[in-house]
Amino acid sequence: MAITINTPADIEGMRLAGRLGAEVLDYITPFVKPGVTTGELDRLCHEYMTNVQGTIPAPLNYCPPGYTPYPKAICTSVNDVICHGIPGDKVLKSGDVVNLDITVIKDGYHGDNSRMFFVGEPSILAKRLSEVTYECMWLGISKVKPGAHLGDIGHVIQQHAEKAGYSVVREFCGHGIGKVFHEEPQVLHYGRPGTLDELKPGMIFTIEPMINAGRREIREMGDGWTIKTKDRSLSAQWEHTVLVTETGYEVLTMSAGTPPPPAIVAAQAAQAVPA
Image (tube, rainbow, N blue to C red; front, side, top):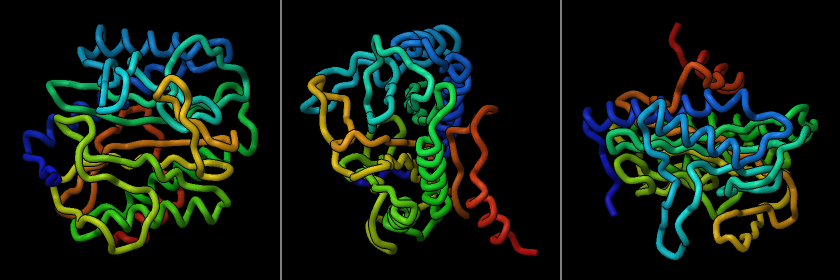
């Protein structure tokens, strides 16, 4: 299937959806604290999307081939859960880490992003893993420009993660997104420079590395959705939706509360600006 080249109207629609997706994460941030259940976080996000934003939670009843319909509005992946954790009765306690993955639909366009949250005081390991994963995502984003290749993104992510002693999950990847939740291209978080599809202005896709503190192998839970690390090590993930522009990239999932790019990417950007 061909990769979508979005029109200016499509890009405007994606900017709005992306910002709204990020604003859900801003909204829920103060509620992520010891004693809250993942189901309560889901309820709050669902009500904010539908009642305040007028958006639709894309995951709710989402049903790709071979799956049962996803039963909730958001994904809540705690500790050793890599992705697609289903909200429920789990009570968050101090020291937990949780990824909240939010996708909203606005006027037919999807805004997809996720962030890591610390519940109370995180361990040194958890904090370091989250920081490195955040750097991985942004290093991948920094490679986005016309003429670059998807392999360039995967390579820089893999190099940075493995240099830190971590591993990259390979069974799940970023994806094209627009009026369709998941479409071409697949955006692998590992690979070789100069390989795979060439990037062209108007492409929109997610970059969402899943990085494990231990080995990269996964195990699927009986609910058909939840994916955990096989060795029960911690996992982290960050996600943005990115547009390929004429000169580089634009991150579409930005809001007032979006964390800024890490120092490692900010320093690169400063070096790239002509004097």
